[in-house]
Amino acid sequence: MADTGHWTEKLPAAAQEYIKGKRLEEVECIIADTAGTSRGKCMPARKFGKMDQMYLSDAIFYQTITGSYVEIDDIENQYAERDMVLTPDFDSAVAAPWAGDITLQIIHNVTDLHGKPIETVPRNVLKRVLDAYAAEGWSPVVAPEMEFYLVKQNTNPNHPIEPPMGRTGRQVISRQAYSMSAIDEYGPVIDDIYDFAEAQGFEIDTIIQEGGAGQIEINLQHGDAVKLADQVFYFKRLLKEAALRHNCFATFMAKPMADQPGSAMHIHHSILDSKTGKNIFTDANGGPTERFSQFIAGMQTYLPAATPFIAPYVNSYRRYVANFSAPINLEWAEDNRTTGIRVPISTPEGRRVENRVAGMDCNPYLGIAASLACGFLGMKGQLSPRDSAKGEAYDADRDIPPSLYDALAQLEECQPLWDLLGPDFTRVYIAAKRMEYDEFQQVISPWEREHLLMNV
Image (cartoon, rainbow, N blue to C red; front, side, top):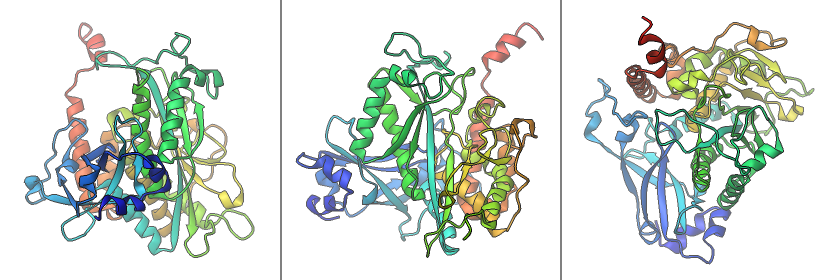
C-alpha cells in the first residue's frame, strides 16, 4: 500500500466523509469467521498505510462457537497454523463511529500465499456461488431482513433472557407488531442505530417493531449479494454497540426467549440476465418464467440439506414452531407468510422469491450463499416445484429438519451442495457443527432437573 494520502482516496464516499478534517487514528483489518463475527488485527492508521500485505492464521476457521478446535483426519498439518494473506477491499471500508478514536473498519480479501482464495473463508464461499451464477450469465440480487431482540443485560447464562426496560420504566411487551409506541419505548437506541448507520453509509429501508417483546426488524435496500452480506456483517456489530450504550444487549439468537417469536433473516432473491439487466423470473408478457419455478423447486429440494448454513446452532431449531411467525415446511405461495418460501407482491420487474427459513443467527455470507445455491441447483436441474399452498401452510407436513443433528445428516449426503459451496469448506463446517452438537449434549438442562430428578 502507498502512503496514507493515497490509500484513503480509494475509500467509499461515506468513509472519506467520516474522516474528513479529522485525524484517522486506527484501522481495523477484519474478516468474518465461520460464525460471522469479526476477526482480524487493529493498527495505527500510519502503519496501515505503509504495509504491503498482512497475515492471519487459518486456524480460526477450525474453531467452533465455543472456542474449541475441530480436528479433520484428512487435512495434512491442520494445526501448522499456516498464514493466510489479507489484502484490503477498500470498497468495504466503513466507520466505527462508537470507537473512542477515529477508526475505520476494512474487510479484507483472503488468499493463500499463491493468491488462490481460501475455501474455508465464508466470504469466499459466497463468491464461489456467485461465480457459478456468472458462468451462466446470471447476476443475483438479494435483500436481507434483519430481526433481532433488545434484551436486558444478561451476565449469568443460568438466568432466562428477559425483555428490556423501556423509557416508561416498564418492561416492553410483545404482540405489538408495527406499533409506533413500542418503537418509542427504546427510541434512544434507535436514534444511535440511525446515527451509526448514517456514519457508515448504510441506507436503512425501514425499521419496525416485530411481534416479540423488544423485537425489531430492519430492512435493507436490495443489491449485490456480497455487499449486502457485508452490510449485515457490519450491522450486527453496529446494533450490539448501540444497545450497549443504553445498558441492554442486542441478540441475534434464533430463539432467545421461550414465550416469544424467533428472529429470522428473511432473504429476498431475484436473478438478472447479466447482459440485458432484465429479471429472468419474468417473461416478456410480465408473467413468471420457468426459471422462476425452477428456483423455487431448487429451494424445496435442497434447503433441507442446506439448513445447517441457515440454522447453524441447536437453538436455531427452536424457532420453527407453527403459528409462531416461523415456517415449519417448504411450501410456497404468493403473499402468504405461513410458507417457508414466499412470493411477495411486486411489479413484474421486481418479481422475487423470499426464503423465510433462514435465521438471524446465521453467518450472512453462508446464509445467502446456501440460499442462492439451492435456487441455482433448481434452475440448472430444471426442477419443478410442488403446487403452491392454499391457505395456512402450517397444516402441511413438516419438511424442515427438526434438529441440527438431522440437518447435518442430510447435508453429508448432498453432493451437489458440497460441490457448489466447496468440498473442503463443507467438510470442515460439518465437523465443527457436529462438535458443537456433541458439546451441547453434555449439558444437563433445567427441564431435565425439574422433571426427571425426582420423578423417574
